[in-house]
Image 1: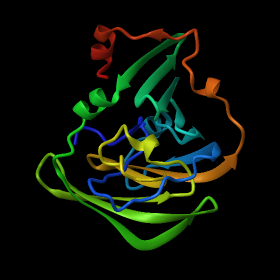
Image 2 (image 1 turned 180 degrees about the horizontal axis):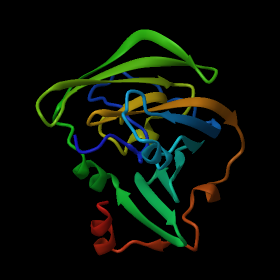
Image 3 (image 1 turned 90 degrees about the vertical axis):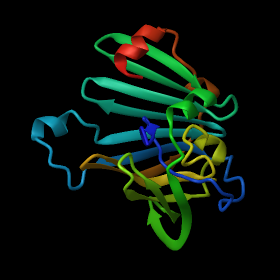
Image 4 (image 1 turned 180 degrees about the vertical axis):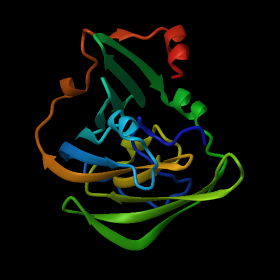
Length: 225
């Protein structure tokens, strides 16, 4: 698996190739979800940790979502459009504002879901930020052929599967993942929702600001995106 997320970041991580998740979620929910980001078990120097994000903010309205993460001097924003099935990544750093948009086909081409072994919804639940979240365990083979698992907790009370199309491992989850762990080598990154606030949002909140310029293909390659 080349990457798990979002996130950026696709932010957001889950797996399914079957129809164990049913329903349509609550498309009426509009609001702001604050995630705490921690790095349990990671052997990081203080200077390294200072450059890593400690919080992420997710905005949800109907089939739109927007994740905002501050990483060092840069702010990374990802907008998911579940209607058009596109993801736009915006990067703002040191006065430079750039963006690029990916289609569903482009996103799927970047991911490798052939190593997925299984996805199971467990009976266990967990209270997260005032919501009852259901447990999901995904099992997959890593690049070395070793079996790994990813544990997530999601609520069907917020969002729907149209918000999850951008990741082949989470596209069948009918709701919002409130807690999940991303593993990168020996390091771990855990996202956990700590506050969920209902508030009115507008479609204009999910548009690309006029002062952002589109990244050229050459620039994307140089940035490894």
